[in-house]
Length: 355
Picture 1 (tube, rainbow, N blue to C red):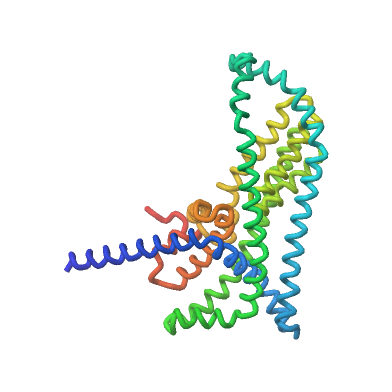
Picture 2 (cartoon, rainbow, N blue to C red):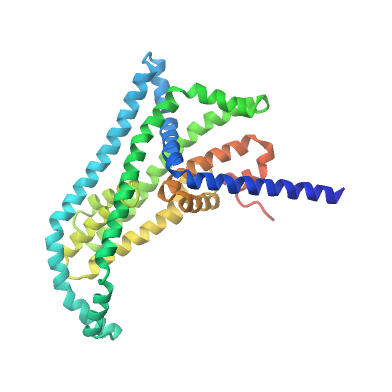
């Protein structure tokens, strides 16, 4: 009897492993479809309470959806406009930056010679080798950025389309899910859907808190280094993190360029870079899992593991999407007794209860 139970448990475990493996494969190779689809669902769930309130006041559903999604698009365009302003600021300062780098070059060469005992001749040879294939590397990098930009633009166009469809046909999707789960979990389904909408709102609030904390840390670091307009650049750099990859680099390049132009030592721009690298590390590995995990009632451990897994699966998009969907998984485990072991891992309120 015991052998039979062990065999049944092993079969069930193997089945779960196989299912998980094939789901991961589908999600990985279906990134182009699933990323904008899930972002559209995210936008739909965030705007759903406002849309429902507008409909209760007698406004047509299509008009309510159009107004809300127009607001979302305007916000995205404003973010892109802010990014364009920062690029223009950097380009205007670029001649001065080049001149300052040329002024710092002899001093850096002497410091390397005195500290690392590498002669100027060896430094020149090393720089020549380093820059031998620089043109090809830059060309490849620009092509990658262009391809990423094109893919991002396509995704940005599809997100409001998916969001509008989710909002307009929401009853259809709810009936579809109800048929799948059956009558056994009919009551739990309503609770899960309601709490899922709430969890997305908490996710947005938690993300705003993360950016606020990062902005405070950025400002403190720039103030400590004596960078001009530290408050402005600290806040802009924080909230430009909304734009994956490009936003943080361009925003950080501006205070670095200011340090190059206004300071006499090359250590100031190096210090600015180190400040942003350290804060970015804290944001990714400590602040985001802790703050967002608290808002969603997710354990820090589960949030951190999910963020790493989402990043490996879909890059930055996976890192953004994984936390709210992990919260939905936690809500499901709250109402499904058979998933209690998973709920213990996901639920922050469980804490450390081992003896």
